[in-house]
Length: 129
Ligand code: FE
Image (cartoon, rainbow, N blue to C red):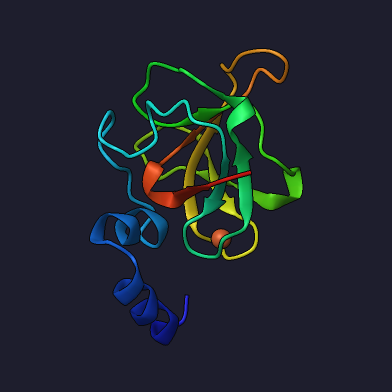
């Protein structure tokens, strides 16, 4: 990310949002705005507004992070191999449009996809459908 762009984001986002979206941080579980939310809506990228997840695909994972079994559009997100956390091999999920860090995707989700998109509340903004 360009320095100038980063400075603009720093001014616009909360410190928590900046840490997650730009520095690929992780919010503490059970603390974010949406982990326990059951309201209907579309979850957009907090940085660029791209529609990423639908409340219809949100489920209670028990992890303390908003969890979805499918993105709105596969092209809306980008997946990258992530080996940053010790020996663990994880798949990072980013917003495909702006590159903002969202969270990770795991293979232990519910039907019909069997996927669990574990996403930081700080990366998301819910809006009316
Ligand atoms: Fe984005």
